[in-house]
Length: 199
Image (cartoon, rainbow, N blue to C red):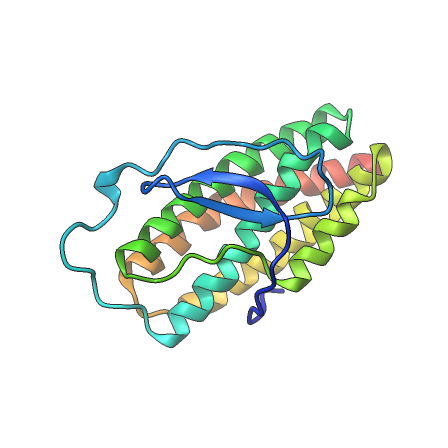
């Protein structure tokens, strides 16, 4: 479940290119995770000139939890090629990495346009999941990745996104949430299918 974040500093393992060229780092103890550089957010997606009105407290809290969730999904999915030989798991990881990276870049563009600091680390609960994934290989990794990153986390995040839509104030943020519910549901559906195969 998404929760209020308490940030902590840990070693970076994923890098996402942003409009300003800065890097966002997620965390894990596994040094074998592939680093992925993503196409920067086009400058046209960032509000130019005077910053837009800052997000209110409710929207800000949601953004921080959503950012942590995306960092976890990206980091976990980038770990998969080094930890599994399953074609199904690699397909799921590729789709999740692509979609969550796009979602994160869009979220960061909104944050920067509002003058909001971009978090550099995921929340402690997400970091614990990353650490657990990092200790597994092969079939053990597949079980943990598919069930926790694929099924359980997506079930919780989809429910939280739908619930928070009713209380979010910013129209751009609400549109982002609505837009990202579709790929999140696709991830969940595929993860459930793979979980059924894994038994």
